[in-house]
Length: 287
Image (cartoon, rainbow, N blue to C red; front, side, top):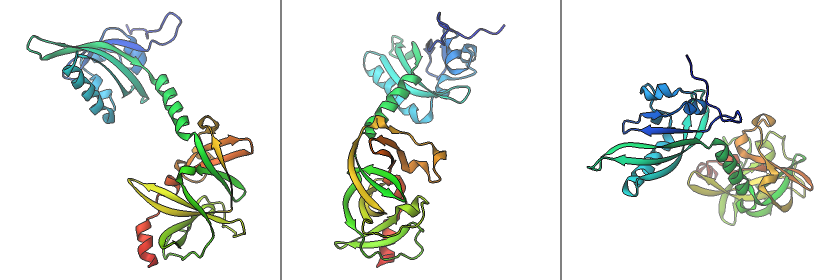
């Protein structure tokens, strides 16, 4: 007869399970709580049909091993956080407290401890850190009657529109290159990049010169906008994530939508937005 899922006295799912772990990556769980957590029955682990270590995401395995090695060099106790893939495909965060047991010769026999599901805690932590990273000063500007913002840390300067030299075979959004005090930099049209129509140059049209980070290198790029508004300090909690289906453009370039007193501002990630400009190739084509 199939065991009933483990629940607490209040009817909530139990989120921790006691275990014994062995050097071959297998584990024995001491109750049915593990089925509630990851979907696999403890009999599957205890019979070695499934190894706990196989559930750990590959990118976390090195850190998991390092925590174990460090514990061996110390008092043989450890705590480590890592992600596992549950039976239904969900990614869960686990926190594992363990005690390593060795024989008289110092060889590892097993580890015993508790594994706890901390997914909700990690999600809140990630949300908090995301909001903290987004908190800061933003330069706001307009394009095609939409209001945008970018981190002031990415802005090098704002200049009036100067002659732009077209570059052969450049993507449609790339207007060309300019000579800014002896330095050749590519210039993109924000409207075209975001499929908002073509820009109409007015006395308020300007070029925002940005520092773009691509992989581990940086380069300067210009971005044509209709007008520049002001610099605002925006709390990350006031910047909501953007759902991809809201926009035709790749949502990776959209950090979120900020709610400020003057209305809504679409916050752009200029590294994602303009990071595909091959600056070196443009320089070669322009000379």
